[in-house]
Length: 274
Image (cartoon, rainbow, N blue to C red; front, side, top):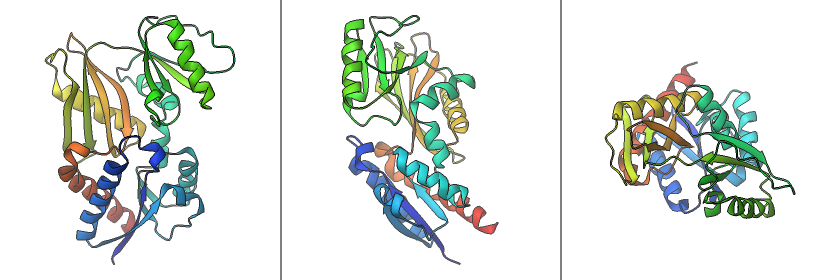
């Protein structure tokens, strides 16, 4: 019997500077699935709240809190959703900054701060001259959602801006010096691609260790299709600094789409057999 699937695109708000690339990887994946005789119906993230899916097999790039809560209900009713909305929720920073270090992943020191009118924040353990402020829920919606600050005064100014925009929870995160690496992966496929986002030092590092840390992070969070960022410190040590649920795979889209589609298809067949 022909498999029928729903594909859910990401709302533009959650694809800053990547709207087209996010759309391209989703549709490229669907094209490969169609070659496997899968019928795909697309829904926008904004349609999720008002949609009663006829499809029990769903692959989704949705990230917004309202859509994720709706998809959690759909998943609890027995549908297969890839990535699981539980995993997407685990990628919200307030959750990720606890889950990864609590499970042994090298990760920068992070503290959660609730912003109110009192902006006096305890910065014990942070270099007050250089650290990150990141919105606590979804990944960046605006460029300012991930900001490197260089003083207590700049920290307060940035927090005020978050507060004005209605963002009440932020993560303060230590800055790790080193080379920034971006990676993309598909679980259980052998596909792992990385490149330097910036290569200041080009320090030698253990690629097997990076791959292991990336895969372990995805397993902890519950992701199947994922990417992320890591820091290679000048001593060669590796720290994960971010994990993303279903990134755009833009530099490697043509190769990635086949692995993503294969993963979705195999999971769907296994689900359908039960």
